[in-house]
Length: 511
Image: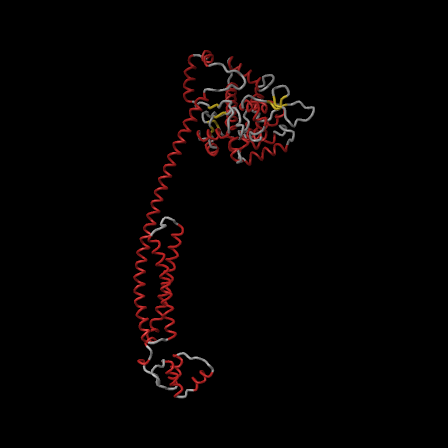
């Protein structure tokens, strides 16, 4: 045998010397057998194999080295590619470490790891497949071992540098967070100061406006005239009552804007959710609607603003009626009445248009209008406070007149001369509306049904009475159905038991 032959060639020579037909058939068919296959066939035919010393050194060592190197190489490539991708992503997102030494080093090391690992694996695989000379192979193995050492050193340096970069990044993030916190605190302080200044200015305006109170229709007597008529004993009682009662806030007849109205509601903490829960409303009386109420795009906000303006007016008028009703019950229960009580009865009989001094009829008429009905009719007749009649003449309920001062409807039919009754302030419109329902012949059904509920000590509900007002509009039942829909959709029944925050509740007693 030749000395320079490889181990495989030696096995083939042995097969030809011992004339093994199985290997000849494979060679004839041009099928290359591997070294383990050749060894197996020779052992079957009891042919002595060459000793392990004669084998090439690379064949022994490469088998031991190849598999762990492949595994190690794959792991190195995976970790290095992951680290390099993370570092490049981080530095591409943030410009903080631009022109930084660590950035360039980390990226270059990551690229080097990938190239080095791939090169070493390819080199070992090529040498194993080609089986070069033993001297060259030994050199390659030596270089590979030094390369592995270098690779480990580089990986350690890479981890150290990466930890340094990560620490710097965390420090920078902490610094940014501290800056943001400082900015937020400064902005909060500035906002608080501005809000406090605005509140102070609005409180000053409200205090000035409290002094300006417009009368409804009649000129009210002065304080001196009132005090002169009151006896000395009752003067002290009035002083005590005034100290207990809250002052009413009546806003002057100015060209209000919706923005100022909403700011006022915020300042006095006027919220409908709170009113629904506590059943108390603050005595804030607007003399007119804001002219730009229709400019509110949010429908719910527009409706809530309208309810906040009208609700205290309706509740205040109901309170007056209940006070008169309480006084009437007291007078009726007495056997003897004095001159003042008789005078008061005459005035109320005239006010409620009761003939022949019928006190029972006065009792039927002198009663409240459910808040839900008043709000629903006000919303329907005034277009939620945006109609021409509401803005120009404070006409909330669209009452007609033929002889009084009014506004002519644009869509009035030919031959008709009616007008929409004009009022100086909003509360005058509410008062006129209640007198209309309590005195007009067309609403007799409404008053009868209400009186029946009173006698049975039942709750006076708007939904129970709404269908008795079909004569209020020309459309009849269709009109009352629309009102019922407004009441249910906007949950107006929640406001029926609401009272003023400065009022004292009085229980009615039946005779």
